[in-house]
Picture 1 (cartoon, rainbow, N blue to C red):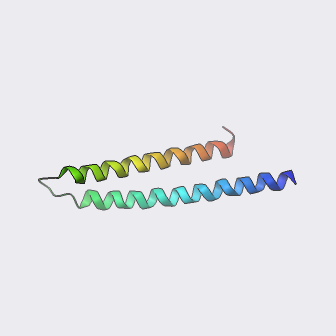
Picture 2 (cartoon, rainbow, N blue to C red; picture 1 turned 180 degrees about the vertical axis):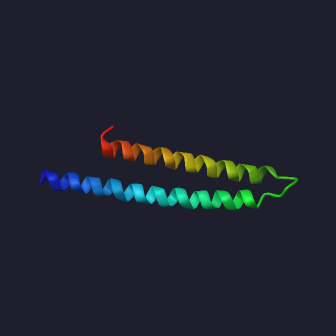
Picture 3 (tube, rainbow, N blue to C red; picture 1 turned 60 degrees about the horizontal axis):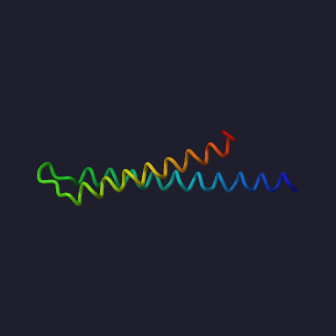
Length: 75
């Protein structure tokens, strides 16, 4: 019974890991689109703020992913 619980917990971590990877990839694609949409001149403050918010979101998700991986390996 205990093995089943550990196995189930491991699967939950794997599911969360895959979800985070997908979210990171989507955010990186949005970031790339936003950066490519910047004009060569006269960048507006809201455009920079959107990019910064995406960068922060990506970093937060990467940190969560690292925490999950550490928990999975027991580090």
